[in-house]
Length: 460
Image 1: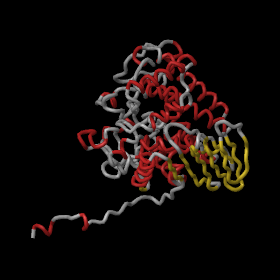
Image 2 (image 1 turned 120 degrees about the vertical axis):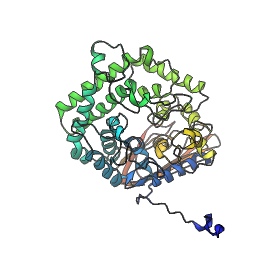
Image 3 (image 1 turned 45 degrees about the horizontal axis):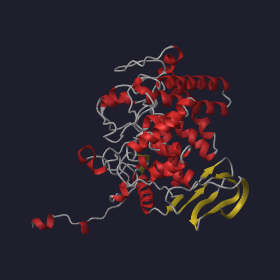
Image 4 (image 1 turned 90 degrees about the vertical axis):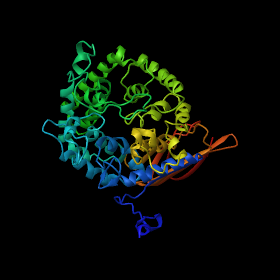
């Protein structure tokens, strides 16, 4: 009788349940591990898209705003994501507080009572401005800005009220004058979150104390986006205010980077990636941060030392000044690294770089956020970017040990393709521009040219 109660694999049927997101983007390359990682990203995104974007389908199943913010661009290449993302944005703003702050999780059900203090956390709650901003940039649709502008403005004003304040458990920054008026050293937030344990192990203070470096950086970046939005909607006075605060935070960040506590002389990759990605530094600081980032990568064996917020940014930052460095990091197969996951049998994306070994073996093994690197594969490696109504920029950038890479994206204007293959010392580029569209081709070794719809093969 007892043997009849044993559950056997052949007696179980697993059914994956998720929202009907039609896949619109496909990628393939000569690196099979990277191909498998992209497949894992698609599978993780599906498994975490059931009415809302969740963090994992097995444990919390919360609608973490940070994960949704990080993954937005990748999701919009991989899926017909517009309706899903707009619905989630309504969920986020449904939970906006009277003071303007936005939630860390939406809808806000099932969380521990004490977690309300994390609402307004930069990088998470910023989804309310960053995702409409990106939606506008990717689709050229400003209606979403008009619909949410007043509520976005309230969150921006909440961010501005945090400037110049020092909160519970804050360390003195030693900034004076204008810099002291704009640095954000208050509020509880998640900071970088989930850096490798040997880079920065999390403890309770990481959620109790302010993160002035992260908060000041994101306040500058988000308010800069808000200034663009206000200008687009002809709210000139608002745009000027947002711009003043954005620039004030930028100057404060520059002074902070000269202090011992937040110096650019660091091996923590996130603290170098973030200011470079958001253009927060002056010329001399930018040059130093770039050199130091390469040194930090070398010191860490060309593995990823970033957490949630900076992992999606690091390849684009590197590609701006050293494309081969970006490819070297992408192709790393050791832990911490993207390809370490499929190399060790992962079919979904891990939350922590350490995977099954993290958090005593209870970490999530289905967490799409680190799959945000897929946007770089489409935008930079294969070079597909939308550039307004019925227009694309196609600017592929071959590199590394890849012999070929190609992507196709069924945009709202039709299927666009871009790929490249190295053959006998030359590189052959193939491009498809959809009907009724034009594209500016920026092919390495050739002058830029604008072409109409059609198929193109170019050899350099």
